[in-house]
Amino acid sequence: MNSPVAAVLCDPRPSDHIVYSYGDDNDLVIAVTLFASAGLAKKEAVILVVTAIHSDAIRQRLEHEGFKTQELQEAGWLQFADAEDVLASFLLDGRIDEHRFKTGLGSMIDAARQHRGPTRPVRVFGEMVDLIWISNPEATLRLEQLGNEVIESHSVTVLCAYSLGGSKPASLPAPLLACHSRALSIVHQDTEHQCENCGSTDLVVVNTKAIAGELVECRSCMKLYRVEYQANGATRLVQV
Image 1 (tube, one colour):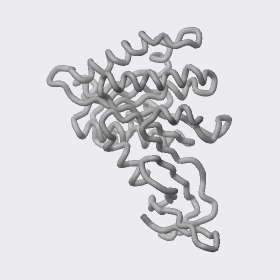
Image 2 (image 1 turned 90 degrees about the horizontal axis):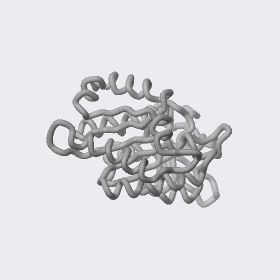
Image 3 (image 1 turned 90 degrees about the vertical axis):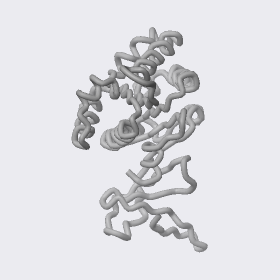
Image 4 (image 1 turned 180 degrees about the vertical axis):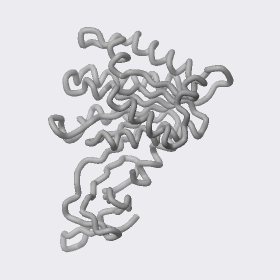
């Protein structure tokens, strides 16, 4: 996880709507854990609407970082919800029941904000959109638009995620990206360079609207570089 992406996940702006695109489940688990742990450390309530395949891994990473997830859940600071169950509560015959979506998510946010004490900020992660963006793109777009309405009405920060690659496209459609205030993604391998620090060729190009330019991260030593274009058309890596 490079510094600019980590900074966005740890310290999002108020009412941010962040999208994170990933190709590897482990990348998602790391990103969501960082988003959640930073919120908890700042005394923000955290709601994680996750699939079963990711729930246990995120919980284990939080535990490894010293967070007692069961106690946090009992105290209302942390809430896990199954993404498929939540999706099924408002997606009926492929169509979104907008009232059910807004009231359901709104109730979760209100409960987390006011649980047993003074009100507190809330941040939400959800991967419901990833379950339907290929099979039902129209509903996915509407879901993102409704998410913005909930963000505005409840003053909440939201992170959502889409898996890319394999049988899925390598990038998100522009209308989906336009629904978000910030977009983070690891999009492809860099096959032209090697890390100047450790010599590894396991490099990924990281794109983010939170910063300018193209960045490359070494996944072996986690050093971050920007790509510098030279007059002869060649490129080189410059450590950030």
